[in-house]
Length: 245
Image 1 (cartoon, helix red, strand yellow):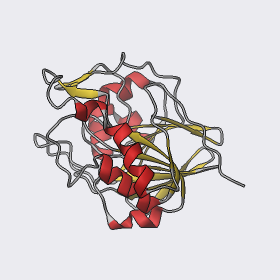
Image 2: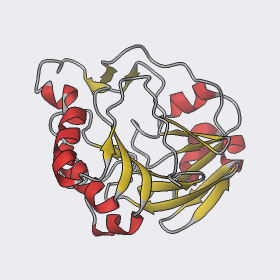
Image 3: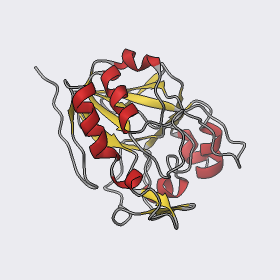
Image 4: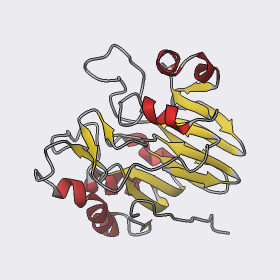
């Protein structure tokens, strides 16, 4: 997802290919990079978030802002030049990109590369502050400190995943995502992390979990977070948010 604020552009957890391992893109063609962002926010090492082929395809020399512990993986997978423009953050630490302040926040999620890998790092989300205050949650389950994020202008909240068997401990479904929005008190929210990738050969298995999380999140949030406005974006859609006053 692209985020533009105060003349600075960020790209979050980019996947720019038609396939990631056993996952196939089921919604539209693989996107072409819309230029080179000032920085890329990478929330954790899972391959559908920290996608090495997409980072190579992106080109340019954007700053890479990654979880604490991920720097060695950047060096091994992308090389010394990429490592030199990498910033590692733990929750509570911050950096800048252009005119934006970027602070790492907690995420309740496993941060390792996967069960086949020894690569380990924490998982984080990001709060981006410019003209607006935006929370990109990355991938997470619920946690109490979501209350501390408030108030927000925009929350980008994961409400699904890439398969029908993902557990609820380290992920949000539509209902838990609406609870996250209630805690974080964002003026606007966009549901993310659903409806794009699905396991090869499973197109007919629980396909509602692929199609429906965004609209279900909007319905539940209308009751549990009535002061927030939800926009369900189609692929390629945009939302402009201005800070009141």
